[in-house]
Amino acid sequence: MTVLDRIGMNSTATIFQGDRVESFRGSVASYFDSPPTGARPPFLVIVMPGVLPEMRPPLVQHVERELNRLWLLPLHWDGRRAAQITFTAAQGAVKTLAALVTPESPPPQFFPLPDGGVQVEWLIAGNSIEIEVEADGAIQVLAMNTAGDVVTEGELGQAESAGVMTVTRRFLGELTGIWRSGAPRAV
Amino acid sequence: MDDASILDQEELLRRLASDEQAFVVRDTVTGERRPSSGAFKPDADGVSVYQSTLLAGAGLSPADVLTHPANLVVGFLAADARAIGLGVRPDRWPPEDHGHPRGVAHALLIGFETLGKNERLRRQRQLATLPSMHFIPIG
Image (cartoon, rainbow over all chains, first blue to last red; front, side, top):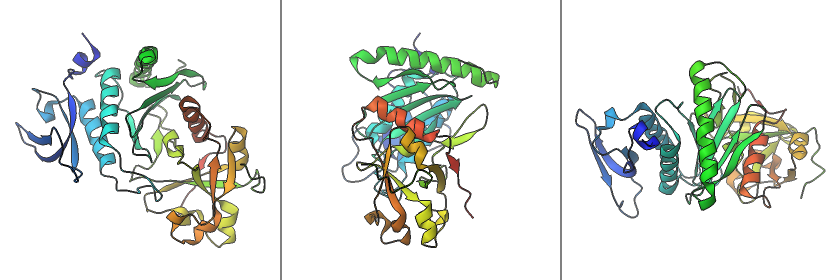
């Protein structure tokens, strides 16, 4: 059984850009395989084949809600030069989370990045995992324990990055235990 | 290049811009809040900050750094930024400030340009957790 199976997402779970959702028992999401050029669709939807939107795991709904919050930020949202987040960045975040989280995982926090990327972050009893997904989809991880030591760091999606993913997943598992117990302890 | 005319004891102000959730990461066990390291991802020229002494000299306050009511402002010492290998240089009247008087106090944190991705991310994390890092109460 893979992590994707355990979260209830299979490998075909996908994020789309959409222009309409009718939510109701037996919800219908209208989304595009290839969005029309020129227009920025008003929302993102994470589709799990065979699963009604409201029946998706809470963590999946949280990710979708948070990505939509960032998706709606206007150009120059930082009062400077920030770009709107890109669909490629949202896709990268979803793919990375699908490979990392379990149903027990604490919900991560999401932040926009000025280049159009997305940062996904856990901070649990002083331990942190930061995942930076750049506008072009490049993914960088930095995990640090409460003592400030680097647990793992590096780029995901590269041939040599399997070890980074493995350590990150294990570390998130340890942080999940801390989060569920609610008591800070050294990792 | 670091500009020594910006003194170590200068408090630098950084606007945490976003929507209502700003760039604040909350520890889900302890409840502590701190800026996200993502708030310090540099633009091509560095990280935008304002010098508090110059703001005060122009009759302005940290509230004048805001571009949206939901923004937050954090402050930290130039010395702390230098201690992690970054520099500070003036960058007065940036075009993005559209002539706002706060432009007189604008500066840039520099030193990210030559860093690899791992090092840059570590530096952002160090910035977010500087000893002097604190939220500035507004209004």
